Structures are given as C-alpha cells and as structure tokens.
Image (cartoon, rainbow over all chains, first blue to last red; front, side):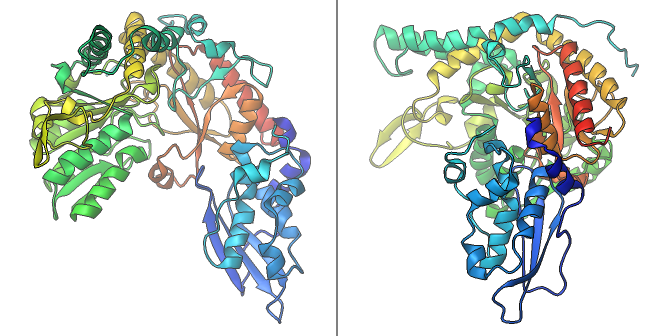
Length: 140
Length: 419
C-alpha cells in the first residue's frame, strides 16, 4: 500500500496548494466524507463575466489522499467555465491523482470533486457511482 | 482498588488461530494477518461454520410449524440455541430472549414497542455522549415522534461517564436510561451495576447495549440488575444476521409487537389478531434458523475457553498494548488507563497523520484496524477529533499482534516523516 503514499502525495499533504478560504468569493460549499466525518469546504471566485474560475481555494482537515486530491484538482480549475466544472469526469480526477485508488479510499479521493460539484450546483452533489469510477481501473 | 497486573497470559491466543480458517487466507501484504478489528466483527471458528453447514445440510426445515420430524428437529435446535444464549447471559428464563438480527434491531424493538407506548411529550430519556449510533439514533427518533426530551450524560476528558452529571439528570426523573456497557470507540467499561442502581432509585428503566461486552467478559443480566440487554452474534464469533434482545419477562409481556405477521400470532381473524406468548410475539416471520445453530456453536466455543479466561486474556493484552503505545512519541491514546475500566479496545491518534492513512498503511503491513468515527460521531466531536484509529483484541490475538501494531505505527511515522 506504500505505493499509494508516493512522495508527491505526501508533499501535497504537507503543503497543499490553494488551501484556505477566498474572501470575497462567488461560490462556496462544504461537504463531508461519511466514512470518517472529514469536512471540506471550497470557495471559488469567478471572472467579471461570472463565467470562468478566477481563483479557487479549499479548506478543512483530512487524510493525505483527500488533501492531495483536492490540492491537485484545484490546481486545474482556474480558467475553466462553470459548464466545464460541471462536466468534470470523476474518473479523470482519480487518474490525475496518479496513484492506485481502491474502493476503501474512493470517497477520500473524490471528496474535493464532490465539494466542487456542490459549489457549482449550489446543493449537495451525489457521490459518483463506484462502479463507474473504478471500472477498468487497477485497484491496489 | 489495587490494580494487579497479570504477569502471564492465561491462554495462548496465537494457538487459537488454527481454529479460524480466515487466518489461512493469504494477505496481499504477503504477511500473516494481524486482525485487530474484532470490535467491528469477529472471524468465525470452524465449529461455527460447520454448525451452519450442518443445520442446512441435516436439520433444516421451518421452525415452530411443521408436524413432522424434520421440523421438530429444527425447532428443538433453534430453541436449544435460545436456551444456550439465556444461560450465557444469566437470563432467568429463555422465554426472555428474543432473537433479532443484531443489537441495533434489539434497541429499535424497545424504542418502537416499549417507547411508543410508555414515552410521551414532556418525558425524559437519558442516553450518553459515549453511545454508538445504534443506541442514540433510535432514541432521537423516539423523542422526535413523541415530543419527549433526550439528554446525554457527559463524559470526562479521560473517557469515563460523568456520574455526577448522571445523578443530576436522573433527578429530573427520566423514563429510561440507555447506555452502552463497553464503548466501541473508546474502550471504556462503564460501571453498569452502579448506574442501574442509581437509575432504578430514580424510577428509570435501564437498557444496556452489550454488543461490545457480551463477547469479551462474563455478563449476567441479573447481577447487573438491568431491564433490557441488546447483543449481536457476529461480534462473539457467531454468524451475522442474528442477535438478541433480553428483557425482563413482565416488561416483554406488557409490550405490543414490533413487527407483525406470521409466527407471532395466537389467533388471526379478519376482525383482529391476538399475539403469541413472548418471545415469539416479537419474532415475526421465519427467523435466522441456521444462524441460531451457528450462534449456539459460538457460545459453546466461548464457554469452552471460559469467559473469565477471555476477560483475563484481553486484560493482559490491553495492559501490554497500552504500555507499548504509550511509549511511542506522537501517539495519543483515548479512554481510561486503568485495565479495570478499559476493554481491549485501543483508540488512538498519531500526530499529523489521518487515521484513514494510518489504516491504509497498516493494511500494507498486514495489520487490520478500524479507522473512522466508529459510528460514534458525538464522541469524536467531544474530543475535537475527526476520527481515530482503533485496534481491538479478541481470543485469537496475542503479544505478537502488539508487536505488529507498534511496528506498523513506526513504519507509518517514518513514511510521513514524523517519527
């Protein structure tokens, strides 16, 4: 299982990118992982046309997987349109993380994605279906 | 009380692993399985697995119905399991033992059947901050539906129930005190006999969630003086899908059915129905027949070891594990330090490392622990923790598992650079 905790994952955990709360912001949402109770919030600032992400930050405490995943995910978001955010593929989020994620840690890896979806739709988003996200992937 | 530390273990836990086929299963780590999650559910010994197979293979028919040999055989074995469980918990009569799916269902049975008929607006129910969600959410629902008030007895910084707080709340005259015997999240053993005496003096009934105690120590419902007890078979090396509610006979007889349908009736007409005698009044539909056979075998397995020996063995392991983990920098243990007040359930946090990461890394070393809120989120809130890592011990654990645990902690701290 040590291959899950590659150096870059631990670096993101120790020094996460885009950590904190944006003030002011246009979008905000907080959600939690039911398995461990970890809470994460996300704030997004949009451009003047209110179309694209100007800045983003996430906050909260959690495991290395959830923190690294949110850190890597938020790095990708600037410049994206709201439609593009909504259409993000959770499978891509897992692939971007670059380490093998099995069913036990899937919610950790997708918490940032779920909070982002919540911020975009303004309500709690559904967890992606495990079978869809892990299909064809190699579980550790 | 003088705490006398055991100098030697009372039996060889490692030798018992030969009774449990799961320990033959290769683990993906390539290492032998150090199973430290029995508080969630326990592996099954071969005798339990064989008893289930034998029940289906040679003694299976529906119970309480058929006028033929096979059904009589199945019924006798099913009722034999009820007698075995009654004996195991010191129940005065097996008719006070109701088979249900698990402790959660047992508690719900009381909350729905007793609760909806004895609790009304303005009444008070007491639970504690220490409860598993199974002994908390049913009471929240009862309070919401009836307009009753639900209060929680506070816990101290070292994980004990605050008995002064209990006394103050008992003075308000609650109808029921719903407490756990052993906390699944902290390991605390609560002084149930004393709490029950106080509760009865205040006119309250006591429901005991014994899911974490019955598998691990002698439990006698008469000596404890309680009114209801809930347990799960799967935590006591028995099958999943069967548990029990024990209740004092007059209470069970005064309660209406929880689930209704077949088996639990005396006479049905289109105009109305009269109920069967307890416990069948509470056992609607075909019960868990083969599981009852498995549960009887599990009880036999534990009785052969002796519950005093199980408790002594776990106490020995608790003392050694507590001492070992206390010596590791950056590890914080929860719950009371005294082995008199702490079952072999060690809940801990490692500074700077989330319990989910801990459990994943442990798994890579073949060490199975639980990480999370342990279905006890109010406890986590009480200590301002999102989650903890929990190592829980049982009969098949031994000193070697403690070494595996401390080695895994060391490896985890090294990986995260916090050692």
